[in-house]
Length: 459
Image (cartoon, rainbow, N blue to C red; front, side):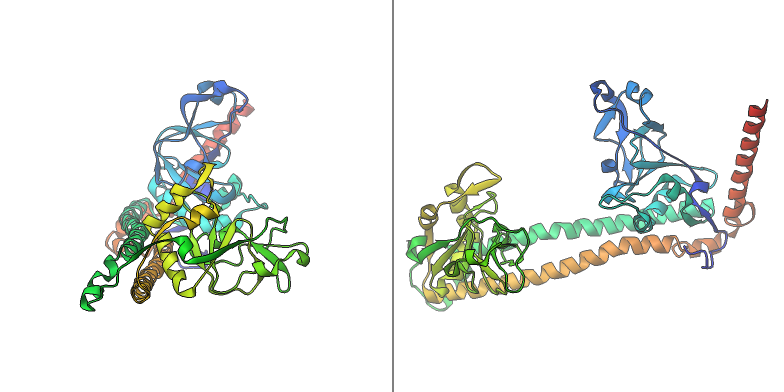
């Protein structure tokens, strides 16, 4: 909260160093195997994220703690990441644990700050911490910067109320997120069921009956509708897409995700290397002959090309009558088509499989009449458009929900979530219960302790 803004009654502006004791840990030498595999939890930034940490990836030994800067922090301390992409990730230690140097750890001053409140407060400040990060590819924030970071805090009783309300509200947000996260898998199953119904004839079963349509399906091979297969070359290129009048080659990633992506391409160092009759054109039916087992043979029909691009040796162009392109695309994306592709693939590693042109052409292909094929394609397009619309709405909803968490946190730390509670509990937020009074007591106690230490040294 900005210092210029009017604070709710009983609140006070201070800094993080005033409401908690801060520290960080270290990393025992990796050269000493005896330091690892012990029983002492060792928290790293990768462990942060869950509200409460109860288990970690690595454990160290007592010998490791004695011979390194790894430090013990008690249960209910709050850890926050200070380095790289994890800056601002925060968790409560649900166990006594040590940490490495990338984690700053706060032990709340229990007289003025609750653990749950501090956890949510640090979460709400994540974007501010990221903005203060220094460094290049791996920005970082220091423990001193965190301690100096200005905050506004309410009285302790109100902190408990804020934390409780955030628990309730953010649990609801998490439930919504979980339900939204389940929808892509449902849409994937829906699309696959549509494709299965399409290539089996079930999608037009009622249509055939209503129209008294009896034309039989043919059992063909892919080679019966493909007149030829064309491939490009493997050439050493500049690893960026070509611009303007430059020339390039497409990568397999250009045809991997169901839509042709011309930006997944490389630039030829010499335009004379470009093979004109291997140019990628709108309307081309393209397919990868090498990819992971899940993505091998996924087809795309090129809708638009604005760059000078040619085929690579790993991307094939199947030449056929335009009316058959969508049908073959539907079939190869269906579970039956995927089985045919995967069962014919070769190679020792799942990370890169291959399918030869002869194997591709030998795939069994059920083929309805042109009229029924046209009806099937129309229905699939209609159903896929419907699912695409749902997916777009889903993405919009997820974006709004992602912003909702930060919005709720912001309201909490402006005092808006507990305005009604404050009005009913003035005695718990004023006088000796105010944040100002509690902070003053802590500062007095610190000053007294500091004075005793000075006297002790002088003696």
